[in-house]
Length: 254
Image 1 (tube, rainbow, N blue to C red):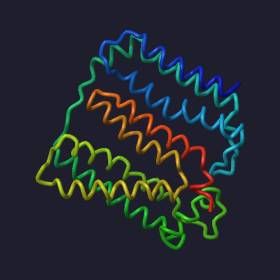
Image 2 (spheres, rainbow, N blue to C red; image 1 turned 180 degrees about the horizontal axis):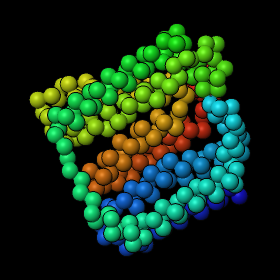
Image 3 (cartoon, rainbow, N blue to C red; image 1 turned 30 degrees about the vertical axis):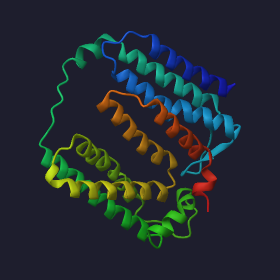
């Protein structure tokens, strides 16, 4: 029943996107529909279909039933509230007043480097509590469930580890736009480091969803900039993403 409800939501989103009248071919609602399907509808369907309602253990020791009707209802309500807000008169009125300006490229680049550095330091400090980053990665599930041999006193630092995500997006925009050519080598190096640190951050905290969303944001950025939807590549990306969500034990349980 829950699986069919997810399928119905996905079909509705696709159908409404095909028939609705748009002022622009690529608008906010299109981007929202893409990310909503990738973040909620598709994973919800995959988990409900493959795990048969088994619970998922979270870091606070609370078991969440992925096939719970309340969770499904929350997804439905959240989606339709966004749709209502998008079509409201106030949203259209104030949306026209927005004026996005690009700041100095050098300043943005320095901010990205700063985020990479802070993220790297945070990852090192967080991992040092558990005997190093590699040990922290091997104990990711235990750390997340508060059953690790060593109790991390600096758990709050892990929130700074994910700053590398934002740094990656900023640096990727420079590479795509080919700005700051004189810093190309430095940008490429920082970009690779940010990706490595992002993967380490996700695996260290046992957050497979974080890792999937991290790479999906690159896809969304490409769609926004190029005004194209690479359907074939999207399908190739979606299949391993769904498998990655469902096969948690093989990636994060030690």
